[in-house]
Length: 326
Image (cartoon, rainbow, N blue to C red; front, top):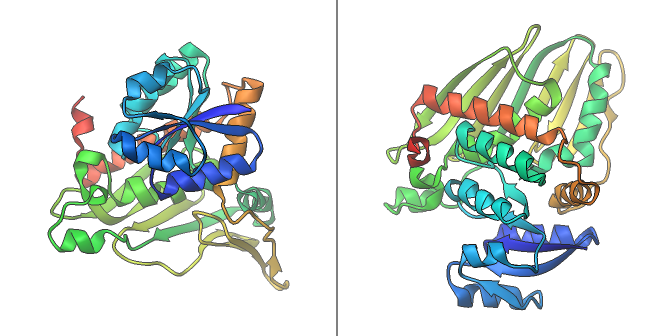
């Protein structure tokens, strides 16, 4: 059993813990919060005794092998570094870090320490995403790809009311591209590899983060258009068009459904059953990497390419974070 600690006590931490425990490969042993009483209340739900309000003390603790990081984006890199320096494996919520420089530093440290460093990009580990990969050869030569993920933020009204929630604050390395666009972008890189070039557009809020935007990834024979937004809801599926057929993907962040359309043929529903909590598959993969000591897995290459593209895109559209100054 992998002894797991968690940083963060919000809903996503609860959801990851449920996913991890469902694999049968983890034991939750430690909880961190900035307020000790918050950590203790959260830990009581899981009968966990070890609670911390000091990250340094937690990182040195003997009762955990791995840490799940669900803090604000701007804190991911420093917290991952702290725990890896103490010999702990790290699974960090996406994005793994604020920029490409931080990602490179983390990957280098993980390699030096022979530890598993893992970005929790759940989509690419789902069974239906595996179906999409296998179905690409049924499409013929690829020509057009349209990936869309637009989700109205529950905290946008607070921003409009004059508050400054973390989700729209550059201090915390947030924004539409970092929080929403990273899903379809990671899917594109997983499916098609690194593009030859990229163009980016974004609409910025007064706070300095992007409200919504578009990326276009240019490959030799086709391009990938990615639409993302935190200020509107999208309802249409994503699609991959080839000369012989088209794949439709419902709700790409979770790949809830996959359908194949080929000319003059009946539509084929390729969807397979998935766990309702799609974080289970990333938790399962992270555990297997630790158990097999597979520090050379391919996921970090995707993380590196995605971070490089997002860092470049932010430069183009004018989104700057304090983390970029370090």
